[in-house]
Structures are given as C-alpha cells and as structure tokens.
Length: 265
Image (tube, rainbow, N blue to C red):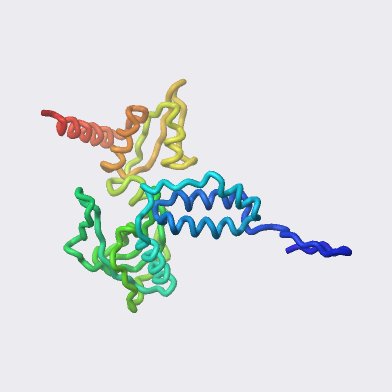
C-alpha cells in the first residue's frame, strides 16, 4: 500500500501481486481444467478475482463459461492430490488401489484390487490430466499414476524412497508422455510447411529442422519409436512422413499394413 502524504492522506495499491493478463491466464486454466470440478473451479476463480479491483474483477468475470460435460463429478482427485502433497512434504509412502475405465464405463481395479505402495516425488501435468511420479514397490521401479484413477489413498508412517539426486525427470517425462516405451531412435521426418507449428508443439523450438523445397522441410528428432509415435505420425494424414532410419520406416509400414488388414472383410 502506497501513502500520499498531503492535507488529506490518500492510499492506493502501488503494485498488485498479479498483473491482469496473469490473472486471466490463471482463471482460464482453472476454468478449462478437467481435474477440478465446476464447484472447485468457481471457488478458485473467486479467489483469483479477489486479487483484482472490483472493476477489473467484473471485466475478468465477463464471458466465463464451463463445459460441464468435461468436468469431473466429484472431488476425489482433488482430495487425493492434497494427500499426495502431504506425503511429499512429510517424505512418507502412500498406499492405494488403481483403476482403469472399462468399455461399460465402469471402474476396473488393477490386479484384483491390489494395494500399491508408492513413494511420491513429483506432480506432472500432461494433456489436461494430473499425474504423480515416484517409486512403486510393486513395480520395483519409477512409475507414474494418473491421480484421478487412484482409489482409497492412505498416508502411511513408512519413510518414502528418496528420489536419486541424478534422476533425470525431464527424460522420464519424455519417455512416459511424449512417445511412450520403445527403442530410442533418431528419426528424420519430411513435413509439409504448415506442420512446423505441430513439430514445435511436440518437440520444442530447438528441434533440428531444414528447408528442402518450397513446400517441405525435414525435422530430425529423437523419439521412443513405439505404436504411439507411429500413430501420431499416421494422424497427420500424410503431412508428416518418416524417411529415416530404415528401421522406423519398416516398423511404420508394418503397422499400417496390420491396421489395413483389420478392416478387411
């Protein structure tokens, strides 16, 4: 608060914690989040609006809209995230069950309701979903779980397995989210010019690219050459093609042939 000393003292806020564009971004993120319920999003937005003036709050609030179809119906995931945050802070393990969603939209608990013992390390955000990464006793390795698929979480008194100092979180994230498990290959992609945005969105601005003619460029990327990667290329409808190495070209062609056969009468 800044004071203007005069015959009549005047007070005004010299600088707010957040600029208006920053608040707008945070509000939009809360509004769009598929992790927060509509009720929780509204509560977060109200708190963010309180950080602005009454005039700015009205301006920020105009046009707010929730797509209720993509919002979760309960706050179990929010409560789970709070427990995991406590576990990280106190360096304790947690126990929980884990489920997937079956074709009938019902919960299918993994391995007959197995209880997982887990040392949480870091929260991860990917494709509008929230994950927790850490060491799983059941798997005997570092793994990640989607937080809204965790059921009946419980904080234990057991000390967590610490995250190794040399653990490469960036490499882990790339392996489990970008292209999933598969051999790491240096792949050359031939791309139509309009695909540059897509390439940068996927691989970052430092990706190695080269213009080859008026309509195409190449991108050299290191990827986990898996079905997920090949499916991503296929989804580009021919605007991105694999040209090297031969191993990747052959695997991609084989996947397409198998897919074609599955539609054969």
